Image (cartoon, rainbow, N blue to C red; front, side, top):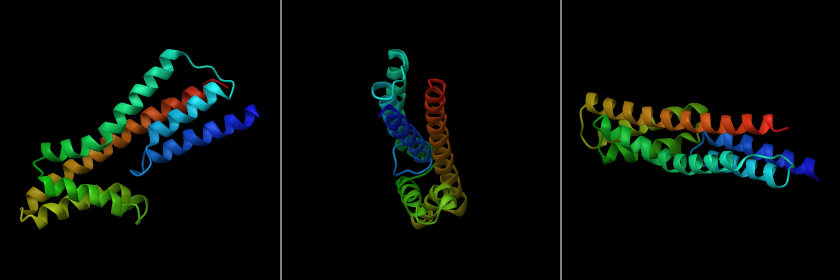
Length: 156
């Protein structure tokens, strides 16, 4: 039975890795759930420090994932329309495939700014900010989930 929990724990961790790219799946919390399964049911032992650190980082990144694109869009001179456009672009990008997920915030922020009557140059600045926020959030999530995966692999 323990082997089944180990397999399920790793499936959750890998699902969390996929969730690092897809905005609909909260990657780090799902991966953390996989670590907890390994710890409590899979016979793996992680220190309290590791478990608490990963829990806090997962919660922090859950909030940062939504805040970073908004913050970077503002920093690059974007308006609310650019922020909404970036959000809609991410969601629409889910239906286009991997490139849609990556380029969705960029295109969405650009179109949102153009709809508000901003110049091409201003719209492009806002789009760059949205794209940077998306990449930053994705990178941070991938690093955290990668660390969780590494910790799980080393525990076996």
